Amino acid sequence: GGVERTLVAVKPDGVQRRYVGQIIQRFEKRGFKLVGLKMLQASDGLLSQHYRELVKKPFYPNLVDYMTSGPVVAMVWEGLNVVQSSRRMVGPTNPAEAPAGTVRGDLSLHVSRNVVHASDSVEGAEREIKLWFEGKELLNWECYDHSLTYK
Ligand code: DAT
Ligand code: MG
Image (cartoon, rainbow, N blue to C red; front, side, top):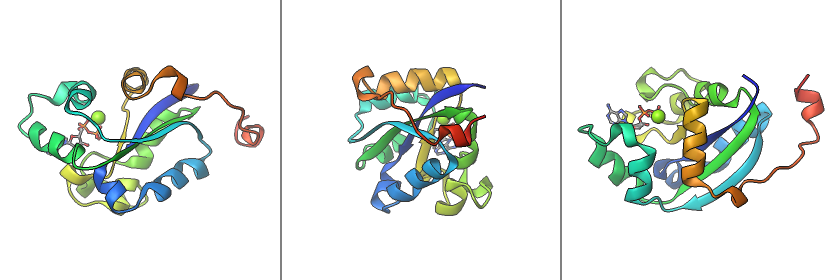
């Protein structure tokens, strides 16, 4: 992969438990660049598009209740191979299977309260970013230390 963008969102349990700062810090420390950030209350309509492959699942109503239970902090991170790297940093969907050191493995226990979202493919990330952000909300800026973290 080259330089990509991905959607990462701290879900309502992560916001309630005051993990926003810790999660941002993990991505900053890794070397990724923050290009969009906002707090919002997700709507049923946004979630039905975001989770369009899951709307028929038996757990979907509970998923929507959870995701609309409070504010979400949505972010767009940019960098080399950021889609796959952020999935690895977040860990498997089910926290019971998530290794220590991953966000989910360190901060959560149950699949229905897994603290954070990260896009699962480059195409998915492009779709999700368009859903959650307007173009003008994403900033192109030069990160001066990238000459140290990128060859
Ligand atoms: P991920 O969030 O790792 O991309 P996903 O896209 O398959 O996982 O599912 C989206 C969210 O739906 C997931 O973070 C939590 C919820 N979910 C998935 N499978 C579930 C299940 N079996 N029971 C309850 N919630 C589930
Ligand atoms: Mg997913």
